[in-house]
Image (spheres, rainbow, N blue to C red):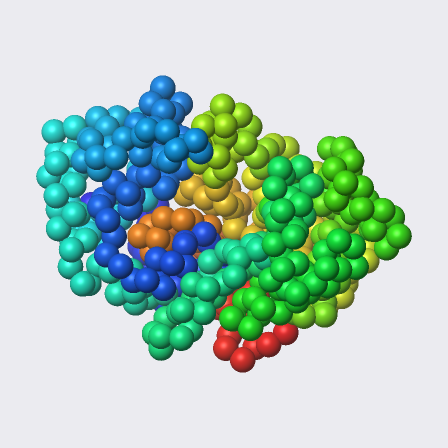
Length: 465
């Protein structure tokens, strides 16, 4: 079958350079319990459909509610529980996914992970389901066996400072050699607009052994929890704010704002100011403890309020929004953009900013690196546009390599391979245009796929801060 991305012999040669390199997954949302418990997957629907908000979102757009796809309700109300019924519903609506990355990822997962070549259609739904279900009963398809088969050198999950990290402790204690680390994601103790913010802050204080009734105690608890994460191998933090705004409040003003938040007296503007200020605080902490900062701004969270009310967060109700970086990041960059101890990996959902703001910023500040296109942009076409937009001003070595950013464990090798194919195709055009010798393109290919993410996210063992 002709490859739609690797259209030239040069591209195929460059892809071959990276095809068998280990996978570095420095940012994602796989549940660590999956690997800590290493239990067989339940069934194809609960593995590949129910937790995949890319899939359920598309079906919702055509009037098929998440209830019919087995997505749990916040109120514990009834949802479809028969996995074969859920699978048949996807197959009956498979035409909705024509041309989408969801279809590409799923079809490649069927073929390369489960060795199922039968195309998914309404009349083949049971055949495909049964073939995958049979695979899931085999020891070779349990999570740890797949981890090793995928060639994962390191997998980063994402946890909150309110997490006791018990699953990671279990992984460390049982002697399995797979390297699974965490990422420190403090959004739920930073975002004052969350209804559970105060309870989360209290929980963090309990785990840290600090009194979070004061701003000083709150900062102390964050530092303690960061050290807890570092102790299990964490090398980066992640911050998913609505905007990229950074604010440098005085300690006294920050303490006053925090006190008002504990009393429930803050506004939306206060919440935005506090989020922006905490980016500066986290930068200071990163300079001290060495964690790489990842900034993921630009999502209008839970835009679909009806979906949030029924099913909660992270089920496909978020929408990208235009994001300013040049002015928003200036306080952070003026304070620490030239500091060699700080490393910030910056992402966007607003690709209009690629060449206008992001590439020039990364090309002008040593602390900044550009993260891969993510979420709505982790598609073959958008990844190609990313390279075309940012390489002029930022080159290749101010970018941080691919991150899969997924909860869908079985799609990880597929997503990495798509990214490698896109980069191979782009590099091939440079070679064909006599803009880059083949040997340098091949070296760049290996760097983008493996060496850069490993270095930038400090994932070399013993790299330290």
